[in-house]
Image 1 (cartoon, rainbow, N blue to C red):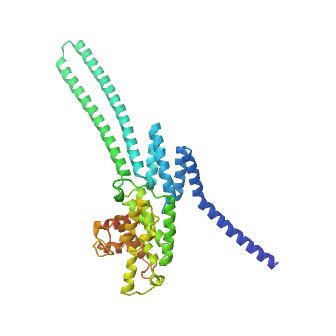
Image 2 (image 1 turned 60 degrees about the horizontal axis):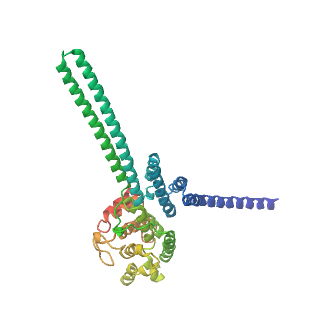
Image 3 (image 1 turned 90 degrees about the vertical axis):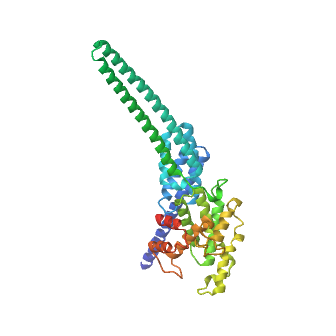
Length: 401
């Protein structure tokens, strides 16, 4: 009897274990199923249905701190195609829905989406202006006709009695009506300008430093995957679990919050996964050492200039960003960093981003040479060392932490 109870106990335990695993897999695959369905609708030009499906995926993933890059890469062309259909059909109510969704998921925005929204807003406002102007002219004509008719009738009845006074009253009334109509048209114009300015502020993005002459496309999925795999190798070699991904996700968030476009922020994410690739050329004993001398410290510094040979897989249009990230992420604002002693604006923006985010992750993490720090004290320590870090990037980091 005891043996049967024991077997039953282990059977129930195994059943609960496998049920939990199955439930987890189901949850993990839910977003992927939605993405597949959204892609099918998009491929068959069913843009409204694809838009609804991708918003389901965004709603699920936005509950986490970081929306996966594969969701964003599919969401951007779906939103753009749906906006093109709105432009063709003149469905301006649908435009308001897209604007509200972009307010919830600003990571989806891109330069071409912003331009198309601005164009739709201008077109819609122009059509409204025509309707307002036509209605205003018709109302003015109708009012003037009635006033003059009343005036003529009154003059004929009075036969001169009080004609002068009545004429003065009519003129005053006409002036007041004209002034009122002018105020209405002016308010309509101001409303239009205000709406355009709000739309411009909401969807504005800074000029990409690496795309002054051409806009960079978002990174392809295979580049993201390759960078993530290389980042895992770097973390394994440097004994820092999930360090590359933690820094890369923070770089993406800070870059986007500082005004960088979603496309460029995604490229920064990839570069931040592999900026420490130069460590792969150093001996494992050096990387694992607890105490090092001056000679070993100089060897460690050399990793910043040894990363290029591990980045040959990066497409040419993104290569400069990756090289800047790897080579200059230890430069300081006051020029005291290495390897070139760059200062202030001489340091590439991606390198300044990584310098701040990597330091924050190191301070706030459990590391052999750091205590456990809370977020506030980690930010405070960065702010105290203004000679090392870009103060604007640190302020942006504080606003999202």
